[in-house]
Length: 188
Image (cartoon, rainbow, N blue to C red):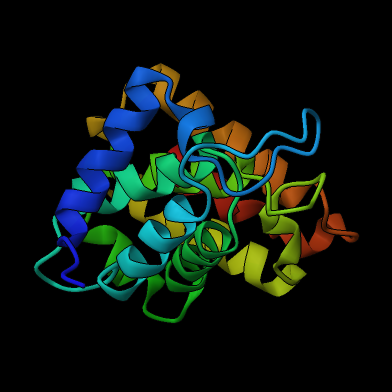
């Protein structure tokens, strides 16, 4: 079978979100109504294929962001959760700052917000809870530093959204001293 490019998948999923077609391409059987959507498993397959090109240098940044948002807004799938965890790993890695610095601040912020709000398949909580405390802290530090270098490109609403995403991620850390209060300095 011939697969579409990551850009095509991103545009399809973005259209699904805009058109409110979540119930048509569910991640599987809807447990509440026990009704199987017309295209079960398709969403999982689309995310699985998109993961392969997520960090390809030819994949437009806006398409990567749209994929992250689609994971957060569409029904939970295993591959969708993995896609966002891949993004969290990339942003939280040693090279995460340099990766994020090359992407428009609004895209970095929207990816972080998707990581914060998306729920995993069969989970009641957000998928970011799968990240260790160290991963959460590194993710926040890298994103804060990259946003701080270009914060003039963000409006006050976006900056408040960034602070809320950081607060959500950092709330699970047991020791407030581990937050290293200078984490948010680049945004101030």
